[in-house]
Picture 1: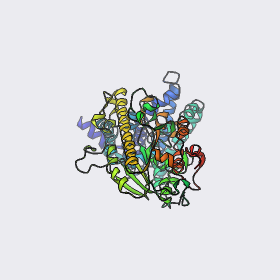
Picture 2: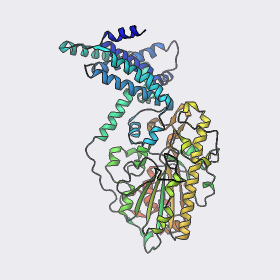
Picture 3: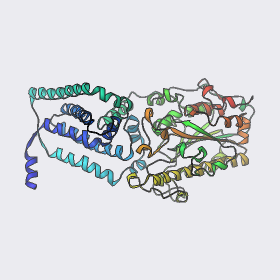
Picture 4: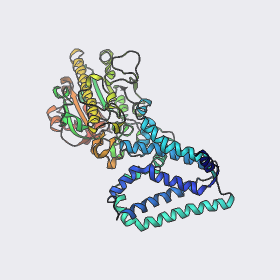
Amino acid sequence: MDDKVDKFFARRISAPVVTLAVAILMASISNGKFWSTFAHAAGGVSLANLPLLAGAFLIIVLFFNACLTMASFRYVAKPVLIALVLTASAASYFITAYGIVIDKAMIQNVFETDTREATELISWQLAAKIGLLGILPSLVIARLKIRFPKGAKGLLQRSGIAAGSLLAAVLLLLLLFKSLAPALREHRELRFLLTPTNFIQAMHGYLRNRWAADVVVAPLGRDAVRGAAWSGQQRRTVTVIVVGETARAANFSLNGYGRQTNPLLSRQDGLINFSHVSSCGTATAVSVPCVFSALGRDGYSDSKASSQESLLDVLKHAGFEVIWRDNNSGCKGVCDRVRYEDVSRPAGPDSHCGEAECYDERLLEGLPELLRSSNKDLVIVLHQKGSHGPAYASRYPKGFARFGPVCTTNQFEQCSRESIQAAYDNTIAYTDYFLSKTIDMLRDAASREGVDTAMLYFSDHGESLGENNVYLHGAPYMFAPREQTEVPMMLWMSDGFSDRFSIDRLCLRERRNQQLSHDNVFHSVLGMLDVNTAVLNPRLDLFHACVRSR
């Protein structure tokens, strides 16, 4: 057996044969999810449909072969082929295991997540798939003795193979276009499932933004001033904005969910829950900078948001002390010009931290003392760890394991959908406790310290929990499931706060079932704090219609 292997690797194999073999390998075993989705979109697997499926497979093989042929030069071919095979094996695992798609936003998530979040996705199944579909073929490629055509004849041969492959792919595409067009038109997610073109396009888009010219941050709301509600006031204000993580509205009992995931919030006097709110994106890297920008979802882009000041800057211009407290993976540039506190890492023995990370209660440590000692009007942002997956069971202390049995691994294929959902519901129950505790703290400060207080909570995006066999989040917004885009949002105000700013709570309650979105947050925060500026859009200010004559 060893002699046969040695003889195989001793032979010199033509470069076109190697590139064609790798093209077939990537088009087939690295794209299981793509082919299952395509087959369903094209009408299923049947004898009558086999020519269409075979033709589509041949088109992709020919396209891959044309691209790989153009890189089949000595000292270039092996590194390129090995890198593509390894990356394709990893992408294939995540697409298959979690039902995700790979686009620029997903690549941005990969680069901007922290080490702890990344390690939750590492498993022996991932290692096995990369080993079998990535490392093993890479070792074979590395050992091969490849015969490359030389000189002008070689260039002509490569050009001929690449052009011939592309021409054949185009002709076949034209021949099958009438049958392929409906599937491709109605299932645009297919382009995000085809490996390796998906991650190459996504990486190109991400790096193009990343390596763009140095960003000059344009001023925003420098004209911001406080309105009539501040005239003659001696009492300070404290406004807490809680940015939730991966919390979907569908699993809040305040929104009608069957499990009692919000027992404490349901008993909080004065809490107003908004039941129909849509997010700006389906991932933290998009939603957080978007919700704090004045751009709105339709006008948002990474480059625009990073080149313009945010809501926090406008509040700072208006004279507020702004603090961002983080138990997640950072503020995505939103808090670059305000005070930042990272409480996500354990620092000695702490009841609110595990071995590697801290629970969200850590965000409240020292907050009562800060409220007492500060002599300024405060806006404090608390960025939760929330319900970040896939390790949902790590997001809450053991005492909050109310629903079960729970999935305790990050390998969803080892768990039932019910156990995954139970673990996720426990994270919502812990968020219920955290928010209720925040409200109690603010109510106590209003009573003891004579401070006017308020809390606004919203989640950055939702989460898929197995609907249509999709898990986690990050789907392109154009076809993201509603579970990833419908988010919770709620408001609590002390009596002093609502009286001071003449806010009609009954009016707000009557608006609780209206269609709202992250677009409303920027303008509503300015509206509730009576900050006047040219960038405030009253039509997007939730409070504008609910302010009594001041």
